[in-house]
Image (cartoon, rainbow, N blue to C red; front, side, top):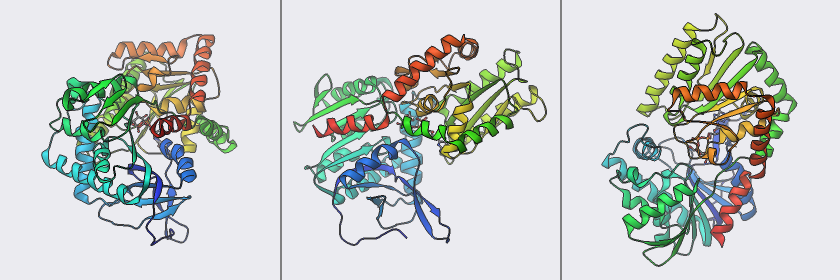
Length: 468
Ligand code: GDG
């Protein structure tokens, strides 16, 4: 069992995120054990938490259950309970059916429900209260993402002594879209409670500053805003990255190499393997991508006898209506294509709706000749960077949507517009048939970029500016 403690803890460094960095598993003796969940954020922040003696505040993933805090890997876990109604209205509702589509170019229609908003505000208040109880005098608190927009201002009200940072992992929309939100001023003012607000791209920071001036009447010059109470608030871009060294080490592991060889074999040793890896989310451009491959196969521009398109779609937000509909659409689309091209036992599209361990992800990245990442809108997209870190050979290519934040950094990828089906098909073909020299030049440039800006640089840059 996790180690419990009755003395109130006081942490100098806190992360506040919707989810805790641990998952509950069943140990060999049948007892529950907590394991660090995989993911860039945890990798980036764990060393900082250990160094500073930190606490992580978040939900543990099961509704209607209150559990005690515990020590984990040298830092404190502070669970915030959520009821079934909270999950429905705060998480699935306002976070994932209002803000998520609104912030991603309304590629699905956002839903506006007053009761969702009320619950969102209540849950944000509980997260702020939990942080206020745990933070030591003058502590640094780093709030993460769109589920917790209101926490900075709520926390500042409770604890004006704290340094508060906020990072938004998804795009921050332009004013034409943001203005649809009935609670637009409250969200802006929630964020203005922070000392430093981080965005993936400079465009997101600029959108925020414009909206803050308009909705909240604050003055701003460049990246510096003067809040209503006279405080200085900075809004800047910190493009997130990955633990590239860690991913490379994983791909170099002999067991992973063996798994990769077996996977290639299982796929029938095709000449070319295309790969897509995404959460099953309508922002990721899966419908468009699969349609493009379907046409390429049907029209004979890709030969299903020597080509496989492997698409992994990790289950995600399965209780939200748009996601259920997407799942059905993709099943139908893939089934229809595979019934028309390829052979029995040798499908053109190999589609898996399941999640894999990180080792298997590394194996897939390492055998993919062309990685295809085509979101309609994406804050950054880590998958694109993970591919570059894991894929050893230069004779490879990354096809990347110009609407992913990563396109601003991975300039040598083959960029495409996923709304332009013919254009995307041409880009996929070009990435496949370009000369070896051209592909290698691009891959080397991409690798240089990904290894030169890793996840701990991202965390250190943000925390340095927050502390300054
Ligand atoms: C949000 C923003 C931004 C996926 N399937 C499996 C698996 N994954 C891992 C990938 C990658 C992560 O999940 C997905 O990250 P992305 O960046 O691609 O996309 P989102 O989940 O939408 O993330 C995004 C990000 O936050 C960070 O700020 O880049 O724009 O939308 O790391 O590898 N991992 C494992 N099994 C799977 O089946 N183990």
